[in-house]
Image (spheres, rainbow, N blue to C red):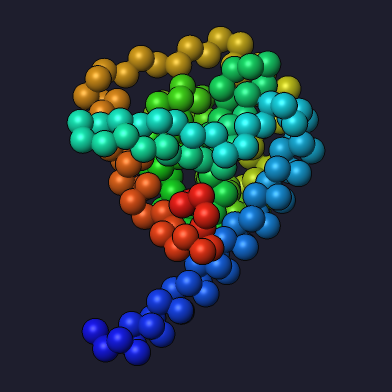
Length: 178
């Protein structure tokens, strides 16, 4: 590729990357405030939690935006995304399954994909479909995270590692590599 053209492409990608990060940051702030409004306590909302994920070849830290843990039990993994929500479903489900979350949620701050983690069943499509804290506590009362066979867990780890490959690689705008 022509060096001047390559430079323009990199600048455009960097600008788009910065814009996406800013929008995602605004969505995260909005969703965090919404979750507080739904009754979750600050200490029950884990911010930027990660799992150390290993397959046969490598180990990486794989993150979501929030984990909801009312009364210390993992209720939901939450991903905030300005893009098509469906494109992050598999990421959220894999992360949620490895962490034992009952729900996996992807939201842009208005719409949401609220999924039952073990089955992948779509439970709701609006942010208001995210259960309030009191409901989450009731749901978790009898919930036992399923035990998945090792081959299924390996598949989920590989899915997370594949999503990690797609994360931001501009060190100047993504210092954490995310």
